[in-house]
Length: 116
Image (cartoon, rainbow, N blue to C red; front, side, top):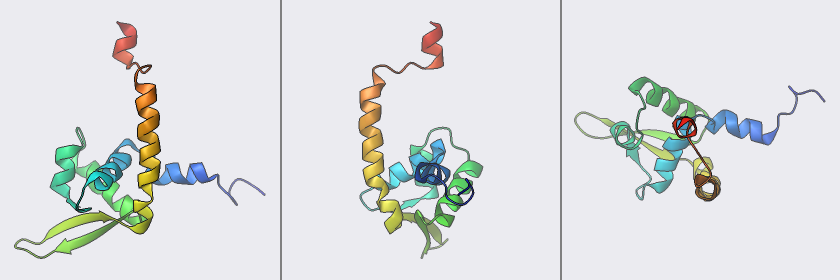
């Protein structure tokens, strides 16, 4: 069996959620009690993300069935994003990443701290 026939499940997962922006979008939706967020909500919670990158990441997550995009009635109509069933399963993964990051944080040094 060659590599193209069967990919490693971790490789598949990282293809879907592997960017720093996508993981933060999913994190915010998991944290959100209403499980719905608008584009501007993400801009307020994800520091440094450009409109282009946010739009691209949202489209990719929707394509990969992690989030659902819906038009909300209003004038003007607005778009809201929510987790799909598959996206909701990320809660366990994000909790594990949070726990690991909390344990690792004390040993972590950014590039600037290493040079000091």
